[in-house]
Image 1 (cartoon, helix red, strand yellow):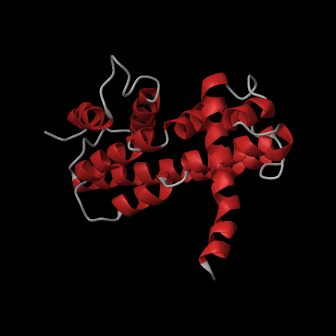
Image 2 (image 1 turned 135 degrees about the horizontal axis):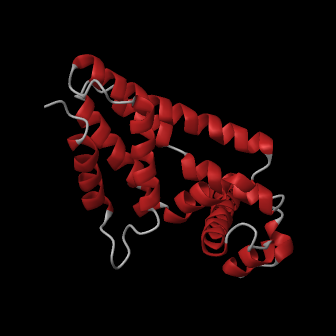
Amino acid sequence: MPATKAAAAASPKRRAAEIIDAAAAVFAEKSYHGTTTQDIAARLGIRQASLYYYVRSKEDALAQVCKLGVEGFLEFSEEIAGNGDSAAGRLAAIVRSHLAPIDVRPDYVKVFLTERQHLPKVRRKAISRTARAYEGVIEGVIRDGIRSGELAPATDPRLATLALLGMCNEATRWINTARGAGVEETARAFSRLLLDGLIRR
């Protein structure tokens, strides 16, 4: 394909990505209910009517933002879970992997965590299935550690998983702020905090 045609073909994809980026930023700032499609269009300096060429509605924009907000979490955790490292090493890597997107796409992560309940039932269920599968991978790593004797036998895998996710998800509110630590420092601190209570001594 000639360069000019390739550029023309890529342009709609770039514009679509820019629109979803803008939607993520506005949803993160104003919340889903506080945002209008005009707000998203204004963020890009385009007409509201032009927006509908790329997204059917505000709801559709939210669905795309949430999909990207959760994208990669399950795949990365599955890769980590199967790498043959110790349970403690794999859990520390999962914590780091969970926090890493805050540096790359913080608006997407925030919107996924705080606004996905506004999705219609079918779309919400699809995203929830991915989230449950992700939780299952973490639980599996913890169960491996208990079976091997590396982690404390009294550990409840489900509660430990929820504790890990609760810490990491809450960090989106303050990480990288003036009074908050960065991703790397937070990942190390959370891993120590979690594993000091799990490692069998």
